[in-house]
Image 1 (cartoon, rainbow, N blue to C red):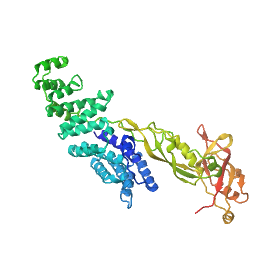
Image 2: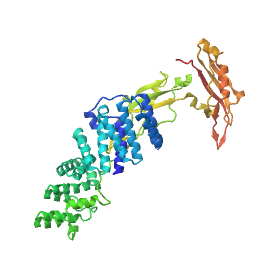
Image 3: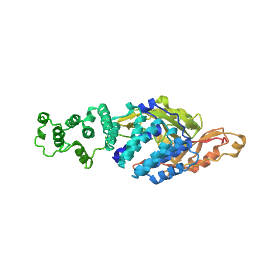
Length: 482
């Protein structure tokens, strides 16, 4: 059961965190607070720590945000969900329960789908602790809030099991009818679905609907998984005081001809529940949406203008990932960039080409909104090209000083230098020469001095480092704008 809940938790938490999607979102939405960029960056740090399994760091970051004064309610709800994720990693179910209870204290400030998802997970957590009454109460509240056509097979199954465990047999039958209505043939033949016929038979027996109980048993009487099921069939049919029906129906099942042990559906289900093959809610295929696309490049495509001017910066974009894992190009928007006018177009275009492994929730691929990705553009980290196209990667960059004359006169410009990288990665000082400077007479000396301090990682051939000639680098000189 814990695997089921944990799997469901991760997928649903991220779905609720990142989007209000699916059938429920189309019916009911709530305007919520925006997440500040500063808090979003903290969320990125928590997510990175979790992906690296650094629970100590993740817990520290979560605690800092929980202690932060003036935090928005929506932001706090997400922090509590991260706390629940940490609790699951530590197999601390009581703490996970406390976390989701705190999420629900903020239900008026969070997306409707997030609140409903938290309720359902909380019910599953109580179930995993065998607190069936509490699980039933929370699940009943959840069922009353969500549209009925939003409830899927796994959820109807869970609801019916809870109803049986607390003695609400009429509700068990009603929820199981919904369950069998929505499952397909493949699911109907699964062990999890067939277990539900036992619940149906036992619930009908509790309600003294003996013929309905027999009809449920008949659906699985030939199944090899259920030992002694013939004994249950004999018990059910005998209790109807119909020898003709008993003989007629059992003649169709020769494996039941020598049935010795008879057992009521109630007792059989009780024995099964206490055994190694105890029925549990159907395993739901879940898969969270990674924050990293499958085709992300470590080095983003650098805009030609930024390369020409030697500009570094960043762009933060937001977009929607569709059910097939592709990005909806019309959803891409730039939230923040620096400096303005350099990286927005390149970042938007590259983000629209991202491909993700789709998020799966209850066996269905989901659309996920408000995914954010930050493109960092570091001009000085770009590999330089030398003679014959060989590349050298800078490992030590020296920032040139801004000449006083240029500062006093308010002059900006650039210098392109050419040089040789030796086998040890150092720049051959005698090889440095200025290829281009604009304006002339201001920045050449500062560029040459900085170039002498640079270090590179030279290319290797058969494990041996090679010297690279005619490497070029551009230094940009831009006055600081306060």
